[in-house]
Length: 229
Image 1 (tube, rainbow, N blue to C red):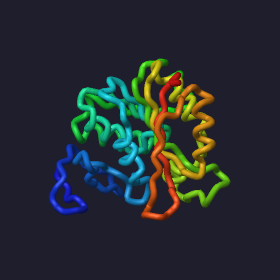
Image 2 (cartoon, one colour):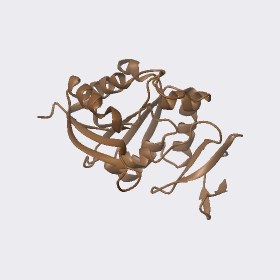
Image 3 (cartoon, rainbow, N blue to C red):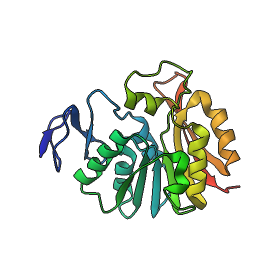
């Protein structure tokens, strides 16, 4: 089917969105993205993360907590020869991510895997990936207001696995010298760097994200290398 995009023009889409969903254009890839009107909707964070990654022509990429499949779509666009696996715990999001992959004709290169990153050893082989990325939940359950909507609350708060679980899964999946990239809260940067080193992910680059000039950084982008010096 064809849907009208938010900025005008049309978006080609194979299949029909479910009731309560919109189909929007995912920039800069130009892909169509189906997402819930009132549930989880992607933010700028995964777009910034996909642009931040410095890996050169990775063959195997994993995205932990893939949501609607935004990062796999962006990375498949950036790395046309790579194969991407997105792992997602919430069944509704995993189904939607799969439809986003198939609707954009990427089913031969991108796989969405329903599952819990805390049980990654039951899902994927060790040391198989050149690049692991994640846009994980940022807040502890006691930090800030937990969204009443299920998709949003699990995406924003550590209700099913915290930072250490995502880092441990990345360390397990990455090959030696493989790269890891994450977008996270600036206020938790010290914790992030410390926990990365605990699983042998040596931080190499940090980029602060500011909403405007002169404002404190709200988010940080961090890249590390497994067993790096």
